[in-house]
Image 1 (tube, each protein chain N blue to C red):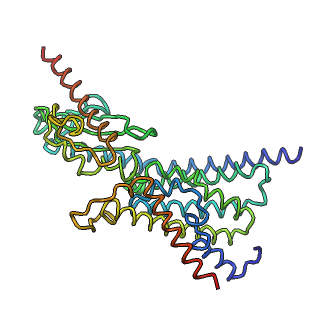
Image 2 (image 1 turned 135 degrees about the vertical axis):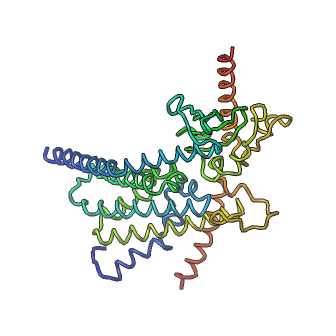
Image 3 (image 1 turned 180 degrees about the horizontal axis):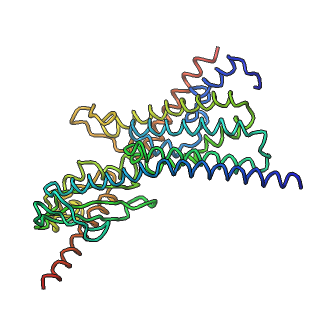
Amino acid sequence: MHDFTRMISVLFIACGLAAGSLSLVNAVTKHPIEVHEQEQREAALREVSPDADEFKEITPGKVWEALRNGQKAGHVFLVQVRGYSSSGPITLMLGIDSEGAVTGLQVLSHTETPGLGAKIAAPQFRDQFRNKRLEQLILKKDDPAKGQIDAVTGATISSRAVTTALRSTLESFNKEKAGEGK
Amino acid sequence: MSQTSFSSLLKELTKGFLRENPILVIMLGLCATLACSTSVTDAFGMGLAFSFVMLCSNIVVSAIRKLVPSQVRIPVFIIVISTFVTIVDYTLKAYFPALSQSLGVFVPLIVVNCIVMARAEAFSSKNTAMASLMDGIGMGIGFTLIITVIGAIREVIGNGTLVGHQIMPAHYQPFLIFILPPGAFLVIGFLMALHRKIMLTLYKP
């Protein structure tokens, strides 16, 4: 009986100490982590839409309107898509100009395989999207005629996920715009 | 084992380098080794994070070894290890966001890295805090050293770069397999053979 209570109390104390120290660490690091995320988001907005000088949030955390000198210059979208990794989505930021051509792409977060799928975040992959239009947003190996995007070697699934997500975002955005125009 | 003379402490420290190297000899926790050794930077970062967790958990496990009843020692070890891993994860996220993005999911994986658990069970739960400290440092250095070497070999052969700089001639066609998991097994296998050879020449009279 004595052993039993001792076992329980030791486990209880261990859990209590662990929880206490973790909440302390959380309290200390919470603010820097939030600041980093905010900074990252703002830097990404500027990078995917380099011509704009102001961003107006249309759908909070999802769609921004890019403005230059108060004039509409394009849009920025936050896109989430499942890549190769099952432990988390790929979060992308996509900028387009008012004609619908891509002005930039950023990868905010992902859990793809380091050394393979993780290369979707490298400039070599992201920069190929610049100035591409909707119909060109497809992997070369999926549509040799129209496709303009080279997949990352050894990471076709991650590359395809990104390309398809961008394509469907633009498609649904165009549809919405056409609906408003009528 | 219980004597704490300087030479025996030194022995606990240096055994992790080669003689009982966590990757080449103990061969536990290879999952993290495979996943994080595709480039030198990732490998070194993983090595440092691992060393920190190894060191802290060894000290704490050894300090509380007499208080914890043996029936519940494994859950207590797991709580200790996972607490330190979470601390590392948050600290990386808050102060080293670039490294945290590249190590991504692998920092939480240190929790299940069997080397930490194995050292807690096999060494620090039976030895003094000082000896466990030495063991932790030694294992950390041994792990970091070998995973960085694996990372360097895989990055050069599989990607033609070292620490992100192109070092192979431009017409070099990288062997993609070295970036993929099988490449890690090949590199580890060759390193093990080399290690055996060195050990045999060093210790066999």
